[in-house]
Image (cartoon, rainbow, N blue to C red; front, side, top):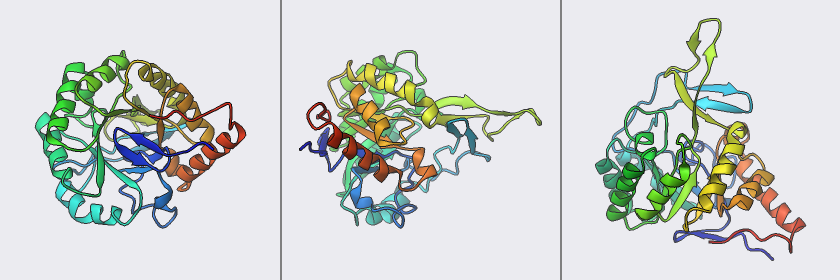
Length: 298
């Protein structure tokens, strides 16, 4: 039998299905609807040093086969997250990986240092790819030198495995991937959303309060699969696939491209049970192909 267990940069997962940052809150919004213990990992909503109000509304617009969002990393800040959210997450037998975001290299390092002392936290995902903030995040993730600077700082400050979350809004994602690997990243997750825009033709104005937003959902899946394929062949560290995964077959496609695990994102807004349906779909595929297919292992 094929084992679904994974180890990514030292983080042990009971299966390869995670929930993507920004699509699952910090678990509270979903735990009454699905068994969080069945997930491979929970990736928290991005945490920043200080509370953030986020971007002006409207913040979400549905598009064909996807959605645009411009939340702007709204959150209650690090102190509130440690005090209120981590004790809740500690109740579940599921790996907790905290997504962090900063406006400066120093902020990333401070976040990593504080979180590394919390026993429930098993890993850090450095968000260097969010397109919906004016400073930090994607401005680091589109420059290989700045990518390396952020990841190196997080590694120095943190005893935990570090995952670099990469942006698709670059000319060659393999260059950024190699820079993150050289700086010490233990794994890579990709892709984050693509910058997009939607205009109301009656008003002539953007349908988003911040003009542009991040496009996610099945519309970007072929791009994500291609980028995972390229990156997996360019680095020696594990790759986690993200981008429009709605079914188990979608997840298998990423794994065949070279991903060792996946994150379910936009699908969570459609059906709260999506991650578990994806997991069951993976199991069904393995049952159908017990000899011809073996899930990639780290």
